Image (cartoon, rainbow, N blue to C red):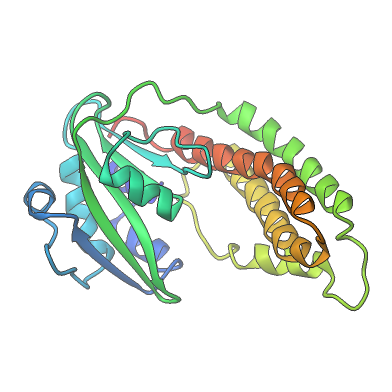
Length: 258
């Protein structure tokens, strides 16, 4: 979202850098191979440690063609929507559960994948994409907002189903959920971002926090493999809804043609 805002002239490079430092104070960047290094201007085989500033010229170069887009992809188990099949980028994005595609659909482009190197370090790897996928559909902002309202209710129901709202010697799930949400509260969005998109992302964060607490708490209360499968079946569609809503909010709010 910040990269798109910068390309549209609505944010300064320092705005992008400052916003991404909320995720990690240090960003390492490099290319997957020599060919990608030549295409993007990023270093290879060793990463560069001057952070997000090294990414910005590469993003502008990758988005130079008419009709270029920046597109967020959030793959998950059994959900590889939007990924260019059989590519190193797809493998890395599945492993990281996120990635960014830059370029004109149907034409060659660049993919970026962040990897957590530690509590304070993100490593960005650039990949060459022979053909940016076309025809990727995400729900509109209205549909995504409605879906998140339902997901908040369904996530609360899931906690009740798992009997995780009972208090006792364990930590109160409500406190754990509030803590999980607080960890995302410091992230900023560009000022031109639609209020509806921000609401969707806030709701998605709320649902994600509930699911994280449910996943961490449920195994101790599960006594059989069948029970574990039942919990996974209960939570999987909610995680899918979170990913879909986040992608819809970012891709729908970002400037689509840069």
